[in-house]
Image 1 (cartoon, rainbow, N blue to C red):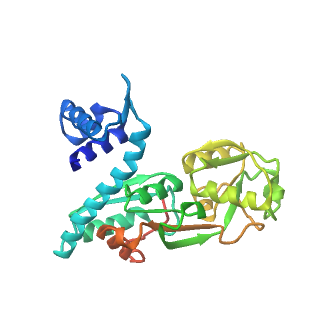
Image 2 (cartoon, rainbow, N blue to C red):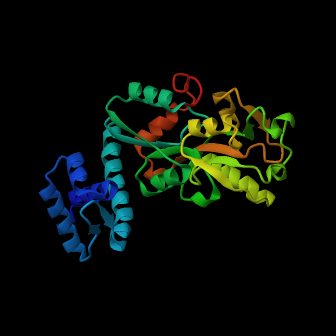
Image 3 (cartoon, rainbow, N blue to C red):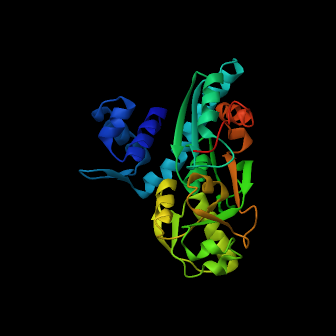
Length: 300
């Protein structure tokens, strides 16, 4: 089994398309197809279900993808470790982050990193915390800035960034606006909620708070970006429970302290693999945390 076969396999799995994967890898489509066929022959199992529009992984393909990503990440780390010993940081920094993460200004941090290590290629993926944790676990990401839950497992390390209370956002004319604060989740029973997809950190934190209080809620309006959430609340279509720093993004909304929830309900961290698997680039980025040049301004 050759490394290039695994690289080709992972690219097709990610793009779900042979032509797009071939273009990204800068190889011919016939060469890519031959590489996949060689891998399938060696493993004696089909790895993809091929259709005219896209390809999907078979059960064998899904099993191989986990191991292939780990192997390629280890090979990359080996190259980077040797370069680091020689005094030059090279290779790739694959970073994941949730949108509007608190405790770190991602753009400023990456700009500081690029100034320090111009030979490292930076790749950024924005996604929900669950997907980011999985990316770090499988080696697809070097590290991620995310919200962590016990479900993420003990195999990931974490560096605390910040913790903050959850806040209820509503329209100034909403009945809650006159309360000044929300005593506990029971006071929100029956409300229409605007929230993120279940994979997002704020949604995970809110779901956990309501579950702990034994209060059921229904998310009627589900979005995948912060500004859409704020727009819906601004039109009085529902309320939202979000980390406190969100209140600064739309000052026309009423922000109410959520008294019935743990004050440190929303904690963001930098997620990393075990120490032995942490890349030199990830270590260098973590070393920049706290630098005055790395964190200007509010999270985006």
